[in-house]
Image (cartoon, rainbow, N blue to C red; front, side, top):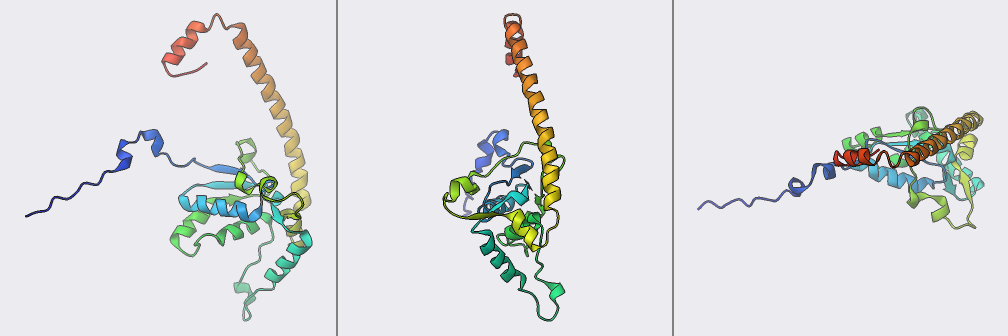
Length: 223
């Protein structure tokens, strides 16, 4: 007697096509004011799930504990090396973006194919380079210092620790960021003025555009 094979229901068959899209194309995270370890853990999990992530303003990441205490930790890490040939590692990265990548790498199985592909989905930058200065940036609430660290606790800035470690571009990044903020403020002011003009134009033509709006809504569009 042949046993009938049970057909397993595929839940994805009953879902609409829009719900099958699991990830955004690329998520840009503004790292300013985030705690290093908490941010890295969230990034590592999303990378392993297949999400592409870009981190900007890595120099503005915070680390719990005073700068002096974190300097001692860095010096202890810097002394770790291979006795016979120090060139073979471990490599002690100096820039904030490379330090963040190293922390994320410790939370990912980077020696396996899955972890290698996950790390290839991550990009990190100091400052906000083009084209990410014109892209929507998000934050990670679970990693924000203001929400996760008590007000009385000490903390330090990753850019300051990197400067102590040998990173030489802190002043350059601050200068470029000040220029970018001026341009960004001017762009935002222009954008608000344009939105106000559009709102006023819609208000002035509210009666005349009623029929047009109905036709557009029927076709699935908005004015």
